[in-house]
Length: 193
View 1 (spheres, rainbow, N blue to C red):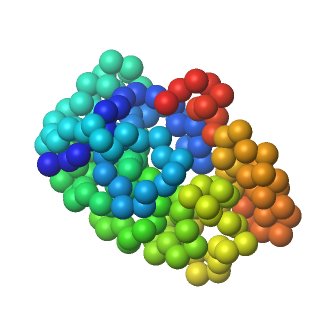
View 2: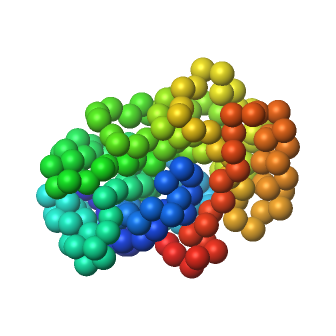
View 3: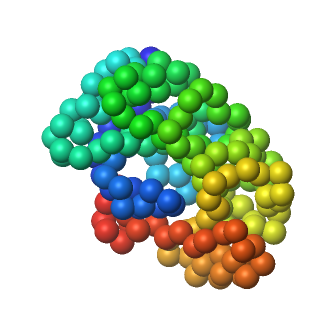
């Protein structure tokens, strides 16, 4: 069974990182071991449904909107749940399953895209498709992050929406970390979830 947040499954456009601008289906999971003060997921109210039902909801969202080859699984912290059956079902339904994690534990299985946005310097998932550092998120300080042991295809710093201090940290980071680019949270300016 999969524990879904109240928003559950919905169609939107990705607003962050390398896939920004891509229409996709989001699966927002409930439950988290990270406990971020800025979290946008309500954990008090959630529902349990089967992985097959989640896949069916993703297919319905894609069919209703005519375009979404990606499913972005986010949370909460997705690695708190067993996602193998969901991931495999999404592949079988013709989706490209993507996982957004804080990196608190290693990710297993075959994913189309792994996006890691650590909430502390001691994150363990140190490889994937993109690393997004958000200064100020759960107290994250960029100067505490060591990326030398990381292996990501793309590296981003992303200011917290509305935080000038977070933006200034990102701009300073860019000056001494040439592999990083600045990533906005475009969905917030677009008014999308």
